[in-house]
Length: 123
Image 1 (spheres, rainbow, N blue to C red):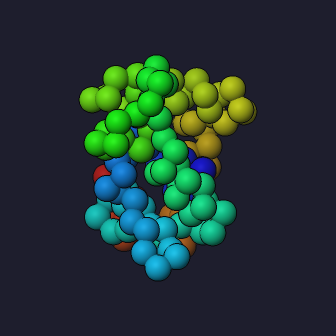
Image 2: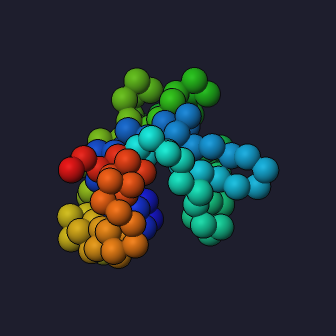
Image 3: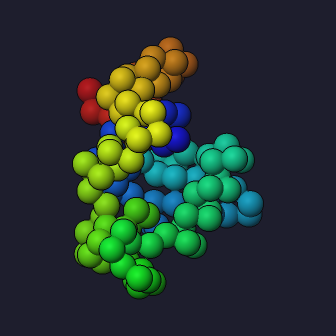
């Protein structure tokens, strides 16, 4: 959903940490660039659950001090971009194509400089 709704690259998604997620008074926001973006209710619930239940792919249990939102097999590394890409392909999401498609409506709604700052997209 982060790729489709916010046109994020897989590399940006894989390197998200729990510190990039902000849960306050019933709202959930996530920071990709410099400004947190409030997530819509269905996605907010999923991200809130992910923060609590996340675990690495090869770990029996992920230690609490692992910062990654998507932990990899080793605590010091996030889940690899290639693994995320493979998982997305399995459920019918084509990362490059779908990310490009997501950028068009976002670009139509916001000035380029603001969109770039919010999403961490560099001109």
